[in-house]
Length: 232
Length: 232
DNA sequence: GCAAAAGTGTTTGGGATACACCCATGC
DNA sequence: GCATGGGTGTATCCCAAACACTTTTGC
Image 1 (tube, each protein chain N blue to C red):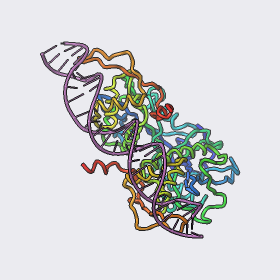
Image 2 (cartoon, rainbow over the protein chains, first blue to last red):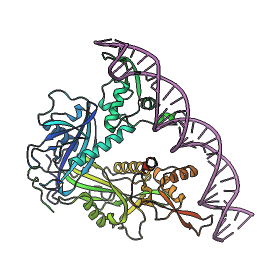
Image 3 (tube, rainbow over the protein chains, first blue to last red):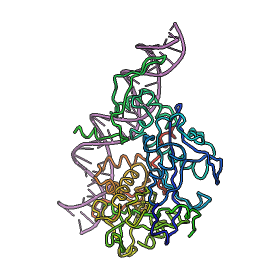
Image 4 (cartoon, protein in one colour):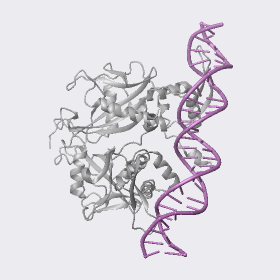
């Protein structure tokens, strides 16, 4: 833990991080919360988070904190993460001025018994009362992910390598919170030219087997408009 | 300056803020820089910024710092501002771990002699060598403002109350860095239904007088798609 | 054969793009 | 009268949205 040469001059605010982990379960967008074990807001639900000492980045600190508090390795287990916003209102923590650099991330699959017992997922549209300003942070994260999924291939962060077009559509519907038209959705997503048809079919269901697709790119990236221009 | 109860347990990183002030001069997007008077990077150009003590928000701190270092009151003089991103790499400041919560803002008009002598505007596409990771911050801010101006009425932050359509187009061209088609620009911006035609004309030029327009809303807001839906 | 989801096309309206000429003014 | 920027319309293409029926499977 590095001691900063400025601590004598400036009593810096406490630096914290809070993490919004999204997951899709039963076609609903879920958020990971933990039940607080300490004051303030003891026994209330909150985002997982904690303190960042000098010499540690907020990503490193988040990794340490998330491993300890919820049993997730954010670099290994999350299929995507990005910085969200920094909340710094003086009154947001009753203990003193705490500046929180927040992140959101996507969890593809939740392994059995991986999570600590005081951690649980809640539907983003049916959250319990939350500690601090965490409802605000989650709403901000939800807005961001809904926007991001519309101009990137971020939906892949919630899917297995191969998936049906219907399951892809359900990811969008879960994140947006409303239904989409099947034919228009398929036309649009195929037009984007970000998917490859595989030779595999989904079987074992009492219905016509569905074609499996996969994303062309394994990286999360913007849906490129360059394809058009490159034709010239 | 509040002393945080956690300082004994966690040596927090230093908290700083850096501010990207945009302005348009001679149809070029400009960024406000100051020449550093101290080590490190003495005599190099940098974004204005400084330290945030506990008990002060980054906006309050920016206001204090910007008043002192460049002579701008960000709450009075800027026509828009928003938080940009938080940069927290441990090595970004050679003195020690400094986490910077950055902002960008828009300056409508630069008053004569308002700026400190070591502050100056530079074209965003012709920046001098910069201290720290400030070139990175400015590129990030440029991307953000170019995106934002396309789906909000943020262009108003660079214009007087009444303006010609050509001057509005030049704002977009300056921010995007490329030319736009006059007829298509006018069709599009008028279709958005965010402008009101005034009864005034711009006179005194050796050319046909131009109609003056003003924005319907004084607030910076997204260009609404509700107009459409409201018709049903 | 029936329940369940897969798969598929057309029409219509609106927005994006490309493109060129006449107009009003000050000097 | 000329230099300067102001102001305007049309044709084409693509995308968005609305909308319903047939196909394939497991049981």
